[in-house]
Image (tube, rainbow, N blue to C red; front, side):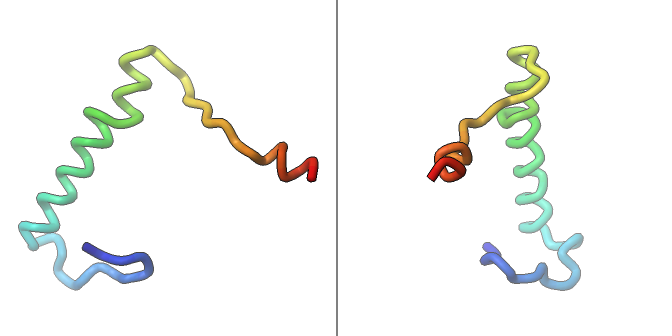
Length: 58
């Protein structure tokens, strides 16, 4: 696993572990992630609450 700020090693496209992780990421993002929720519940957007207004008022 890469830590924040680390670059990818050279020749990652031929690395089976990298390819498996990439495919797994695509699967979870499309089949069980935000894309799935948008399609399943016929949504155009997902809104997340924020504390911006709280910090703005202080």
